[in-house]
Length: 571
Image (cartoon, rainbow, N blue to C red; front, side, top):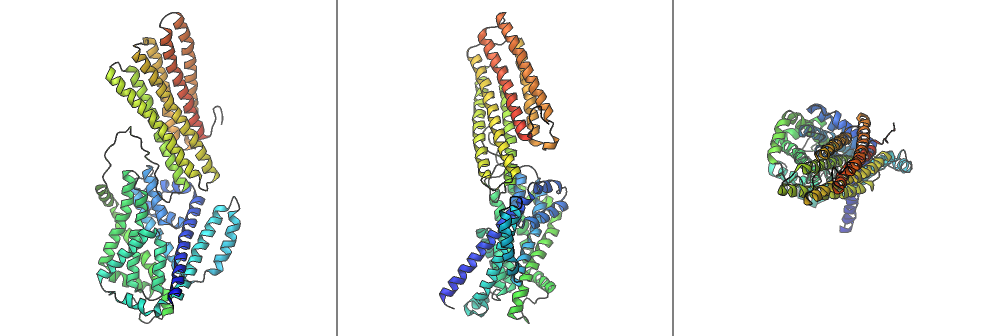
């Protein structure tokens, strides 16, 4: 063949790999959308011990057809505090077993003519995509059709390449001694590097099957590439965890430790282990007695069988040592030095890759709860400010409140930006409703910050002008703060509880109490000013604080209504 012919075939292979990666992505995302919040509930409910956690990882990875999606999802849940590190490690172990299904799908694509199902799948898929109720099923059919079509194209390109009759290719691979451990390690590193670059172990597996089925790449080196893919695929979760908290980064590191340990012990027993797997399939690693056509059919099965045996055996060995793996990754990744708690930083929202809308909304929900906690802390500072008499301490506390007011503004903007990005994706109606509710929640929480700052400024004016409340006024303000504090505490519970477990009546009752108490104090204030118990200026400052507490109660109710979807007096 001419150089032009090779260039055309090479472009076909590249295009087929791109189509394969895209098909895997579309199929995986469609399955995750169909599963929706059920994936989160499954992860939470089925990780009670290491074995159920492992089985959960197997199930979810088989369902979404992407170990990277499962591991990134798991890291996100650790980051959000929904899974412990030990639970995450067991899920990741299961994900490694679940991903072996992909290798079997690949081997099927190289052994069976899939064109009979590809084109009908395209036709049915495009009709379902335009159906509102079945669009995710249509996306899934399109994704799997792209995947199978890519395998058909790859198989055809491999036959056109005719490497088994190419003396240069045969000589190149023959120059590597298959019985050299050093050469095996080189191919492991090559597999790792390629997988890190293309961010798809499925694509590298397809290349490996293509090279082995043509007969130019010895099965030992093909299996070495598969081992490299297992290490390279951990890069996705580690990249996603770069900006996450310490436990999430440890979960991603555990994935790397797990796979590296597995590769090390397999390399120590490489030839006996490979020969054992080949014997299970009925193949001689030397290739003796097999025609090129027979090799093309059996070698993809050998690679898939090795991939399964390796991951199942590695999981069986290491599942007993999860506490030890936890200690290793905890020793490698130390907690970040404690920064000032008042420095602005989003804790749960990360800019990781391969996020699904469900995970993004979950992260935003956790961040909103943190936002509410900060506003509650800000209210506590205002209560402290009321008691402070010493000048330096007063200025220091007032400065902290000013800083928190700036934090509330920044959190509202950043969370809103993130939710805006999430809303650009194809969302279900339920998820769209959640995003709208969250936008309302952050607006109301920022208003709570404004009210707290207004109270602090009023107290600062009182301090500067050397005015003083009466003991009775102090008592009333403390009572108002106590009711407001309880309203904030109840709001925080609403933000973390499941909607069906939330008792909104408590929040509505507290808000009624605030309204009634404010009305009593307002009437009493007019009488006291008329009776000259205190000046009009002091009465104005006093009522400013009382009114702001009542406003905080209104904002709290707005947050509760947004989260629960219930109106005051509603069902």
